[in-house]
Every structure is written in structure tokens, then in C-alpha cells.
Image 1 (tube, rainbow, N blue to C red):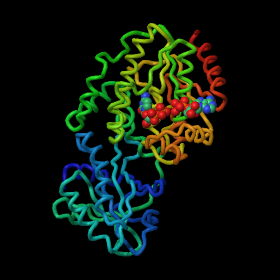
Image 2 (image 1 turned 135 degrees about the horizontal axis):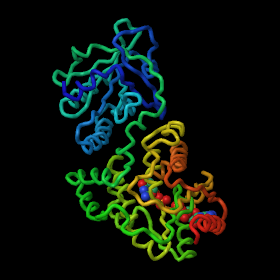
Image 3 (image 1 turned 90 degrees about the vertical axis):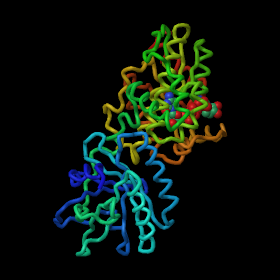
Image 4 (image 1 turned 180 degrees about the vertical axis):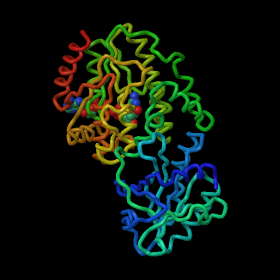
Length: 421
Ligand SMILES: Nc1ncnc2c1ncn2[C@@H]1O[C@H](COP(=O)(O)OP(=O)(O)O)[C@@H](O)[C@H]1O
Ligand SMILES: Nc1ccn([C@H]2C[C@H](O)[C@@H](COP(=O)(O)OP(=O)(O)O)O2)c(=O)n1
């Protein structure tokens, strides 16, 4: 058995396991003795005494490799498993222990599929950083047990005698929140830079991104003029408003991510969250540098900035309803201490139906994430709520449903009130 698997074993009984079925998490734990607890729901729904399996990816020291492997594992399982086998996202974590989350997949097979599934999993534990367990009914036929597989014999291990699986309560916060800091959201230039630097060996484009980064993190000049950020979901009217503000105020308009990153954006959008979010985080530091340059001559309007980076990352990391987000006031919503703070952040909000109508009228292709926003109501609600919870500076919400000119006037009022323009 590998060192990594060994290190998990002593805390095995403190861990909670979560399987996500149709977007809803089901929790269970393991115990050495059985005290007559129920069978966890995930197993209650399994028919004909079929077998289930879990494949957890343990974190090697190389975070980049682990993140890439997790994404590749899903592709491999979907490609090589029998089509009848059901694959669900799964995780294991120690409640309230930061960075304790281990992610993986839960497989449900029937008697016809268990041989090909077991062949595939045996091969996986020989070559990849995974921990494989199988779940089957205990001898008494009433309970279910979990068996960890050994990596040499590809069989049920002696030391890890069967543990009983028992229901576990939902944790106070969604388990993904345990690993958000510095995996999904970066709170300093150095943390995001570190990820991009380590990507250099496997993603050639990372080197090009590193070359574009400012040599000094702090904005080189403190802008004399106000810097106003406009935020909001796609099609809430950011482009329309920022163009009008530029003309009305004689301001400089900066898009975010900055134009110099455009050639690499599609490439990084394909990468797992750790790498993708580091790319966007670094984009904000390039924007901050440009703000410093322009803000000594004119007011600066920025189309998206840190709020977008953090809100989309948090809303993607966490699934389910808004109550699964880290609570209001959580450190997850804090502004990076080394990132320039704008004078004002305006969040445009829009009724979902009107937003869809505007999207249709615009008739452009959408990113996968924007497609997701359309289809997944809960994701949209999580992004909007995360926007509202970010502080330092917090955003000021403006209803974007009136005419473009009314929205402009409303925002000009806010700017004049706050920035003395
Ligand atoms: N206040 C408004 N009322 C009606 N339509 C608007 C308004 N603001 C923008 N639009 C239209 O809605 C669509 C999306 O606006 P856009 O500025 O491109 O949004 P974003 O930059 O946030 O994606 C465009 O077709 C635009 O002309
Ligand atoms: N400063 C920024 C800007 C955008 N992002 C991310 C957040 C989302 O994943 C996408 C949204 O950008 P997109 O170009 O689709 O949005 P618009 O069409 O400009 O409204 O980019 C970011 O993380 N940080």
C-alpha cells in the first residue's frame, strides 16, 4: 500500500464521504463496529445487491499534476467503463479541516459490469495516485461494508478489514469550501504566480503568460483619477454601460482579462480550476498595472475585475443551492491585500428572463460557463450572491432593467457621489 493511502487510514473513521447524485450530496461515514445504524441512502437505492466502487485521487505534492489527473480520470472512466456503469462525483473530507478534501468518483455497477469495472480499477491502482474501495452488502445481508483495495494484489486488503458504512449528517458548509483558498481563489500575486510557474513544463503557453506579468505587484502609480469597475453576469449591459461611461467621462476603458491575454484565454479555459483560476487572477494584476498607468491621466473604467474572478470561481467550486456557499463574512470573500482597490464597483443585476432576451437579441456564441448560467439557475444565483458577499471594496448593486440611458444616469450619480467627479 502506498504512503498516501497509509496516511489516510488512521483518520479513515473521522472522514465523511459525499456522493453527488443529480446535483444533491449524500453523506456517509465508515465505522469499525456497527450499532444498528441505517444503511446510507446512496446504498439503499442500489438494486440486486450490486457492487459500488469509489476512486479517490489523493493529493501528491505536485498540485498541478493532481489537478490535471483528476480531469483526465473522468475522461478515462467515461471512455473505458461499460456504458451501464453510473459515474458520480465523490469526495472525502475531515469536517472543518481546511485542505482535507480529496476528490474522486463513485461508480455503481451491476453484476454484468463488475468484471470490466474491477479490471479497470485494478489497473488504475497499479499506475495512478488513486485509492480504490469497493462496497458490498455485509454477510448479514443487512448492512454495507467498504473494503480498501491493495495496490499490489489488486484485492481486498487484510489490514483494512471491512468497515461498515453508516449515514452521516451534512456538514455545516459544503465540503468544497474547505479547499477554495489558493486552489480556486488566490489571495496574492505570489500564490497565483507559483501555480503558473509550475505549469511552465506541461503547458508551453504558461511561459508566455509569465512574460506578460508586471515586474512589480503594487500598481506602479497611485491613480489620481477615480477607477470604476463594472461587474455583472453576461448580457447585463456591461459593454453598453462601460462604452457610454468612457465617452461621458472622457475615461480610459480597460477590458478584463486584459487584451494581451486574449490569445491564451481559450487555452486556459480548458484547464482544471487550479490552473484556469490562476490565469484569471494574474490577469487582474496586469489590469492593475495598466490602471496605474492610465489613472494618472484620466478616469478609468474597468469591465470586470476581481469580483468576477472570485465569484465565478467560488460558485463553480460549490454546487447546489446558495446556502452551500461559504457564509457571509468568510475569509473566502476577502480582497487580496496586494491588489489595487478601485474607487467604486458597480454590480449590474437583471431579471433572468430579460437577461435571456438580451442574450438572444445579441445572438453571439457563448462560453461553456455562460451556457451553464443559462441552464443552471442555481449556478446563476450562486454567482450573484458571491458577488454581493465579496468585500474590500464591496459592490454597489444597480438594477440594469431600465433603458441604457437611465442605467447610465443612475451610475453617473453613484460615481459623482462617491468619486467627486
Ligand atoms: N439597459 C438596456 N436595455 C436594453 N437593452 C440593453 C441595455 N443594455 C444593454 N442592452 C443590450 O443587451 C445586450 C447585452 O448587453 P452588453 O452590453 O453586451 O452586455 P455584457 O457586456 O454585460 O455582456 C446587447 O444587445 C445590448 O445592446
Ligand atoms: N477579471 C476577470 C474577468 C473574467 N473572469 C472570468 C469569469 C468568467 O469565467 C468569465 C466571464 O467572462 P466573459 O467574457 O464570458 O463575460 P462577458 O461576456 O464579458 O460578460 O471570465 C475572471 O475570472 N476574472
